[in-house]
Amino acid sequence: MGATKEREVSIFRNGRSRAVRIPSDFEIEGDSVMMSQDEKGIIHISPKEKKMSLLEVLDWLETQEPFEEEFPEIDDPLPEPVDL
Image (cartoon, rainbow, N blue to C red; front, side, top):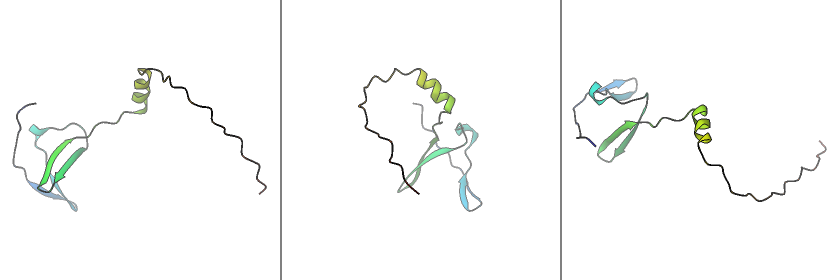
């Protein structure tokens, strides 16, 4: 891990929220981030982990070993007819 960078930045109003502009030399990928806070204030901002699309999940599933576990039979009779 590289050296920690620190820099003073301005806080401004954005509607009813307060915002911080991330300087270009602190570039973060993506459109949203995760923010951590403790009793002293904000301590960490990091890129939000990208969720896989359905196609990416299907591609990933193809690389997984088949599920070998045997499942017990379940007694699941049809429901009794109901006269409405």
